[in-house]
Image (cartoon, rainbow, N blue to C red; front, side):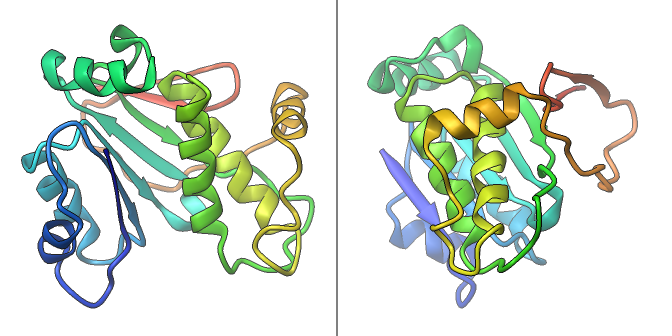
Length: 189
């Protein structure tokens, strides 16, 4: 049900093949680099229902399938609302950390935040927002995990209007943007 792809040594295809990525899976790609874009296309072609890419200091990109059957099967496994997850494309900018003590493991913490949100039944905006919030908390300590507070404390920081960094990613022409209350960007083409 879950394939985490973070293999910088081989091609994205080989990494996904070894992970046995198939329909209804979540593919999380850490480290976009030159091959990350291909990774998204490959993951979608192999049938992943949800693809998430950690974009370094730009945040997290999340894309879900438009195939209602595949999305429905994925959502049923996790007791999620299919209508909320079907055919979504989001960009969750990084939150501004109180201070940066260390960045080791921040991408992994972001992925952990995404997975925790999925297991808690979150919708796509909430899941992407939670993911980038957990990632931002992780950089506030020298090691990857001691800066991460409880889930409730993360949610409180978000609810208090935790500021985010500006996004400096060029989006395709004709892309319409909408922001949710927390600053996660919903992309519409």
